[in-house]
Length: 212
Image (cartoon, rainbow, N blue to C red; front, side, top):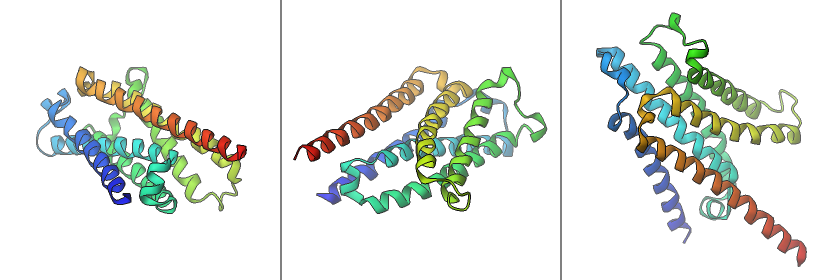
């Protein structure tokens, strides 16, 4: 039975990843129409890196929420280990995304100002992600109390998920189209619903345990 749960979980992840990576091809951004050669390749790779980061960030929320399904399928220790590793991968793909997107335009033409507010949201998101990974991996060296760190870390995770949705929706004209926009919003709502359900289920189980 656990093998079936693992298969289902992995299949859902791979399907989500494949769908995300296909979007830049199916709904091509107009910015790619004016790029050629290495610049176009870099921009395309940057978009794919962004989709990787988006998928892994949503996955990170699922891993953090846990739930009996994942715990029975993989075990709590594995989930926590993947959660830590996944955090580093998110930052890696996010940084790769930023570099490859900016490289064709030149680092001297950084998108700064009110006109580029979606890009500024992305910059804020990157700093949030980096701070979360650093504070997690070096919490003891930074002398951060676990309870206080956890009280900040979890809300920041949800904040990061909200930021990435806003960034993706408005930074790329690919998501101005109804299908990719709807897929992203439905996935985000499903993600929040999953977290809410896990938390509600945990409270119910706790009350039952206290009642016995």
